[in-house]
Length: 147
Image (cartoon, rainbow, N blue to C red; front, side, top):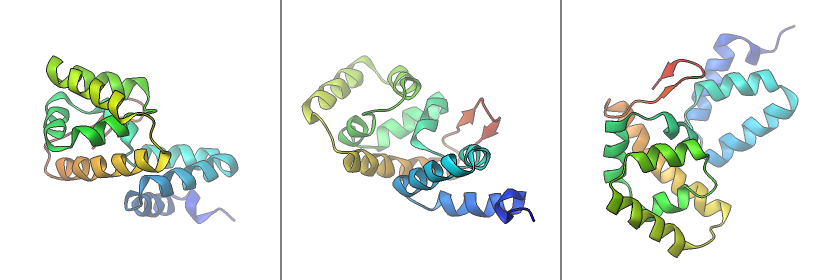
């Protein structure tokens, strides 16, 4: 008998649940699934939005996001981020704002994982609002999904 999570309906239900969870919960669930059911983890990652998806945010929407979030949150959230996220954000900032961000990253020093997750969660709340109002778009090339 096939697992109910293997069906598209079960997968959609689980993805919808994960969309309402914080990033730590999502990470724990996805990491657990990765060990036991790697193909399911891959399919779920395609269906939920993560901080790392900011690497694929459109210019205008990302610039709007950067105006709405605190520089300190961004500095903390970027710690340990993939290079693609850093590059997309940096390319959408003025030189002055980029200088301020670098100074803030240096000033905040090392951050605990919990602080990074909390900063990312605050940013993703704004991301969700911008996505809902169609002011930000994320186009991931790996799965052709547009948010």
